[in-house]
Image (cartoon, rainbow, N blue to C red; front, side):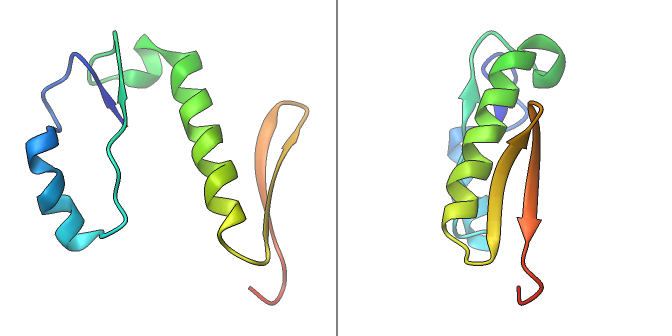
Length: 79
């Protein structure tokens, strides 16, 4: 995740990251600088929660849940 107003990570650099992390994706949150968490808190939380929901569906033994609006991951003992 990067801020749209930040030049710290660029789309042009994504292939370099994918060499090390083949499943890497770059998501940009508009109207945010390098400190996305401070500039667009709600959008960052929504992006992270969506990632966790998607990620947890791809791995058996992991369940993503919201407990009192707090995200959590549950791991089975076999994982």
